[in-house]
Length: 118
Length: 112
Image (cartoon, rainbow over all chains, first blue to last red; front, side, top):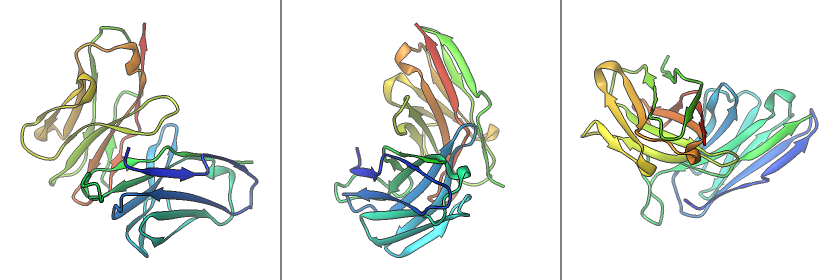
């Protein structure tokens, strides 16, 4: 366990509403990632961060935005949720943490958030 | 474009059978390679990884993988599966940077 939590763990929302998912880590890892997992697609990278206020797009970033104002928190926002964004969202971290565990090229995953958009 | 292919989408085995899951990637440079496992309802957990050195890598729970550079492959093996190995298995590659590219996953069902 790399000290990663996600909130909420489950959410049901309606099309057109904004949604924010939170990823929180306790070990000061530099890199943070948001993925979505869908059957037949594996995990696809939405956005990632390589430091506070430093973020970049992944392969499926349309309709999503992120923010990282503190090392420990990485927020994923769906400005106007659509049914195609129904998915399981995983946060991941990499980089050496304060525990001394980890490296930049090995990712640890959070427990996931199941999002349903009606 | 860089990609990772997992050829078997669904595998059904009986307990004690041997397992081999295929993984091929498309990238000509130095790569870091991983296998992750996801048990039902859980998050991904690292099974094993290859960065350099001995191409035969041993991981947790009796799993191993072999990196064959000439074939761009990193196949996962286990000599004798157990019912508790029922899960989804993902191959991942870092092609030169710290960003992963995942395969689409293989669902393994082990019959007791």
